[in-house]
Length: 235
Image 1 (cartoon, helix red, strand yellow):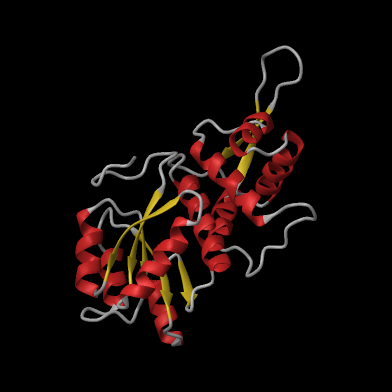
Image 2: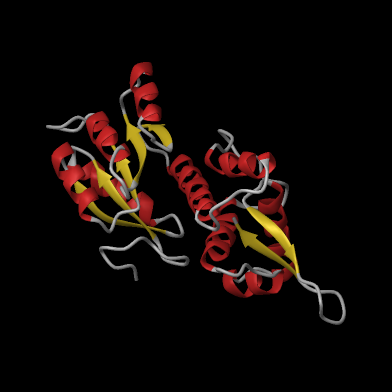
């Protein structure tokens, strides 16, 4: 498991701090986070000062941040984290519907802005996109071309509703995403099937879907006899 003072390594759950002024809502948001493969709620903060202090202390990869926090406002927390080297990212989840607040949150680096009451499907989609983006930007220091840059940014900006091809299910897609992110060297269809419990043909369909969306790349291996198995590697 990740330590409290180092970034998550490949295969570790991404650690989420839930910052909300209502304890019951904070706990519920934490339960929703825990339902998404590859993520783990590591605590709650009931006001802005507590949220900032906990985030700065370390052991947090992402803050699920309400803007209407008691004490220090959520936008102040977002701004402070944006200017702090090594700080966690921020995903805003708030009932604040002011356009100026949305603009400010984006300016201060929020990766998403969700309006509450929080729907699990929407949270899951944003978290999975964030996980793919985070894996991609940490895979190597440079990008190859504009197409790769576009693919990176596309992982953070999924459509409002993902239209899955017939026969694919969102829960199974999440399982394949999580297995792919946990495998530093990528996965073949056989390995994805073993990791997720899906049939090989089914696992390959999910991997192809993720590759087509830019969430991973196809990496054929050459040099051996016969046709080499295709590997799928998260960015």
